Image 1 (cartoon, protein in one colour):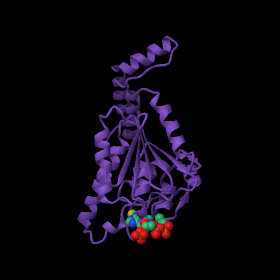
Image 2 (cartoon, protein in one colour):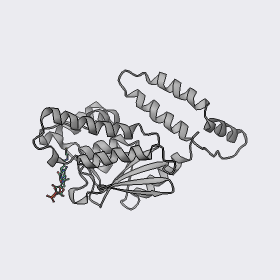
Image 3 (cartoon, rainbow, N blue to C red):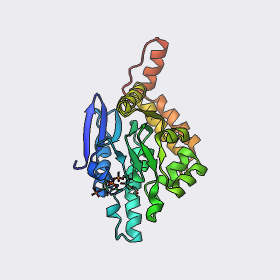
Length: 257
Ligand code: COA
């Protein structure tokens, strides 16, 4: 990978977006590398959970790479958006937990990438924003949709229309991030959260991802989705192990089968 650093420690894969001289802006090559990475790790049993972070101390991701926008036709713009949306949807629906470690600017596509992750932890120097309107654009990687889901329509409208950046604390108050930490505690907090999740049944975690996503998917009834996922759990080894462990008053050892 040219623009991503990958490091697996004890089953937690840290994906570092590594274009620090461009504040980790997402060019199409980086988006494609993200797509490939999530395809590669889908069936990789050595990867249990994922952290996405930006290289350096200044930015998580300062947006899509604006230099690639120049001269695009409406059709090409729509294609760029569709490709980005596909990758971010893949992250949102990923069967293993994905946490964004927001270590600086999370602007435009950077904020959208963080929102596509299952959870967000921000360092106290992080800044969030969807400044696309300043460029005569709107967000194109799911920002108008996921922001409404996370913070509600009224605040989302203000955030999208004013292009103003907000602090990590404000983002936490609005429900855009789960936790704010010092820069030093950012990755340890993500690891702590992932370890809590990784103690649970991977089958059930996948069911949670699917069911919660169904709530927001046009044409899907989340209650029906939940009903199917609930039933699926009963056919799993994890369910047998979880209930046996409860009866036998011991900790379960889940296999994700
Ligand atoms: N796309 C392409 N390049 C970007 C970028 C982006 N989204 N964001 C930053 N960069 C580049 C800058 O062009 C600069 O490159 P250069 O050194 O070759 O000139 C480098 O990253 C450093 O950025 P710079 O603007 O000098 O840093 P700063 O501290 O003065 O400002 C920001 C930081 C984040 C406020 C500013 O870079 C910015 O506004 N970026 C664009 C944010 C944006 O609109 N994102 C949404 C895109 S849809």
